[in-house]
Structure formats: C-alpha cells, structure tokens
Length: 236
Image (cartoon, rainbow, N blue to C red; front, side):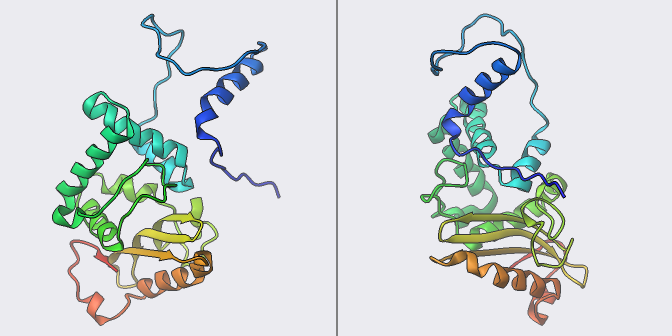
C-alpha cells in the first residue's frame, strides 16, 4: 500500500533557491549560476500568490509539525505589527501577547526563532496549560482545536496508542525531548487541557507513558479533577 509522509525540508535557508530552480526547470527553462538574496524591486511583480486563510496555515503547521511554515508565520507577526520581519520584532509581539493572556505567569518564557526546533526556547508545562485554558475561552478556539492532530486519526498523532478520536494534541520532539499539549475529552463529557513534557536522553521511550497519561485523562483522572468547573478545561 502506497503512503504519503510529509517531511520538513532539512535546509530551510535554501528552500527558496531550490523551489525556484525546480519550478523554472519544470517549465522548460535552464538554470545556471547562483541564487542570491536581495531586496525586491519596486516594479510590479510578474505574478502574485494569495496566501490561504490563517486558519488553514495553522492547520498545516500543527497537523504535520511543519517547522519551516511555523517560522515564516512567526516572522510575519513582527512584520505585521512593526514592519520588521525579524526574530527580535516577532519575539516582542509574542511576549506581549503571552503576557496579555496569562499575566505574570508568562515570566520566564523564552522564545527564540519560532520554528519549534530551538534548544534556547523555554516554556513550562504550567505556562502551556494556562495558555490552553485562555485559548479555550477565546473566539478562535474552534479553529485552534480543529488544527491539532487527532489521536489515532491524523497528523503526527496517527500512530498514537491513545484512545482514537478522544484527544487533540500537538506533539513535539527533539533529541532528548518529547511532549504533547492540547485537549482531551473525558468519559464524563468534560474537556481537559493536558501538557506533558519529558526532558531526558531517552525521552522517546516515554511515548507509551504519555499515551497512558492521555488514557488516564480520558477516564477523568480522579475525583479531584472531576470536580473542576465545566466552563474551562483543567490543565494537568
């Protein structure tokens, strides 16, 4: 049986060069010399392309952990707010946004390049949990939840051993790091915010434990969790 498996490009800085060269050759053109980055001319473009809606972009990023798209979206935040598409400008936007939503609990969060691949980035499980709670109460909640991989169904959660269809979780992994964050539907009908992060040289071995944690939350955990109010998910 044939299958498709999306793969993030290993050399993001050469993505434009490879894409343009490939498209040019596909149309019958010949390509020689080298590609250099530069400032676009002020003349009207030969063609233009309209971006998909933000909800569609975020869905592609989250379902398949597309790090290149994530970084491009991150840089767009700085350009949109200050006219500077730089990591520094974008970090300022994200830090202000995070503080507006979770207040002093945002202290200590470190955002680096927005790609999801930086070892300098720092977020605690509690910070992610509070952010998920705030997102649940926001107007974009339906789009956010729909963008997250579904356990045993699609995206990076398709091979998950967690109960099929009961969890919408964004996965994350680096060498020595594994984690998930998102929402789980309990048997009681309550929805919970769940965050699990493992930092260890053998972090990938924790995947079965993470699946077991999701199963535990599906079963509503314990009586203390079940007593939480219904209006916002519980972060565990």
